[in-house]
Length: 277
Image (cartoon, rainbow, N blue to C red):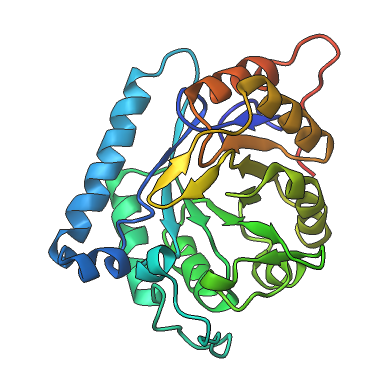
């Protein structure tokens, strides 16, 4: 991966890994909008934009991560309270299929992505399909899951994007040894430490975090969350819990990442970057 070997990587814009936002360019997201004929164009354009951003970066290597996710119409509008998760071995017709993931993974790899980042993998059925499709490209694959705090205090997963499995059970089913990394994403900072502990129980490779800050008020994200320095304090605690990859999701901007890069990616006296487990 990018950054110091056996060290700490910080990613997002203005940093060491540039995750291109191709999450909403799969066929399951574009066809309902009448844009199914432009799937290849959308993915190639996304990679091209990220490669151009990499060319503009100076001073350190930058990897381009092609994102694939569960994003589809359900992610925007919900699936209804009566919906149930089908058998874990079956394809769920409400979400991207193996064929859909294979199409997008091949497009991202062909266009020049350096790795595939699987995001919002909240159910074992389509999660396994995404991992299979991404692995077939031969590129490194990151698995990213968004844990939520249940009313009873336990750590769960988004019921709108799966069946509401516990976070631990979903990680157990999806975190296979051939993954390049497993990360916590799109999560409130206060669930991260516990989630990292759960991941480490089931996965021996690199682990990481890119949390959210602020909140969603349809149709916009509300940027009223942590300041860059406050986010850095959280990130310091994630590193102490074993995170080797640090970044930001919704509500985390360039200034947050700049502070992370300055403080984490260039260890100062007394700060030691952790080695992969």
